[in-house]
Image (cartoon, rainbow, N blue to C red; front, top):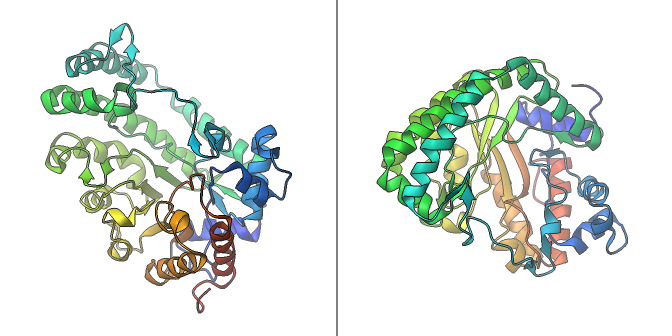
Length: 378
């Protein structure tokens, strides 16, 4: 890629694990509208009127070097006190009706998978157009990069396909009961999804090889809560992990930077994901047992430093701590992070209610590490 600023280039070099002086910053994604306006130095309420423009201005002013998941309108789903719409989805109590089937039981989940999802995926395999897929990927990444300008590097998000847990479609209760009662149907679904994913990911690999955008992706499917994986890890080993490994092989075997978004306590899965071919992680909930110090010591299959998108906690430190706590946690993240491949920000999206003084300390601290790297402390 050409025409990147020094700030965006810092992010690209870090993706490639080239030693750098500074530590790049990833998106400071706050859901509070007043914070976005303040970061953008705009008038109150301006974000709501022109969200994309103000969001990008806020990210630039915050010193952002890289964005993968680009969600400038996402804060519009919240008010000053959080979600206010009162709408429901399959994961919040709504019983979905899919293709005429009311998903009100585990049997209904299995029925829909066999009658619709699996046959539809077979049709997608039969009609797959590799050339069109490569073009669509490149066009999208370059289009968003143009929108960003030269200061923020656009990195891919979820373009690598893999079999997922489809609780968001069917609802937690009935999907996970189906997972327990009909493992053969679920594995059949994972297998056909993997067949399609491997085909798609060969196209992703060819798109990466053009060099027109970073050979990087953040894979995202929440698979844990505070207690551990959402389903027994041994069952994942048996009916999910082999298909996941096969699905990502066309990109994982090429040395690209592939990281996993971590929610909840995912410690049991991390070695398995590294063995499958991933080489980094993002989004740690330290209070649930995510051992940052030991995670940063883990090694991908090639023995290199792990790639880590580290962040100050959005569930404890930022909403409930003081500026000195933010400062202290940033220092801890840097001191214990990998020597190459470290990017700093906040652990996930900041919900409304984070004190401005904590946001300000975060921005100031990120700037210091961006300019000075590991030299001393902020």
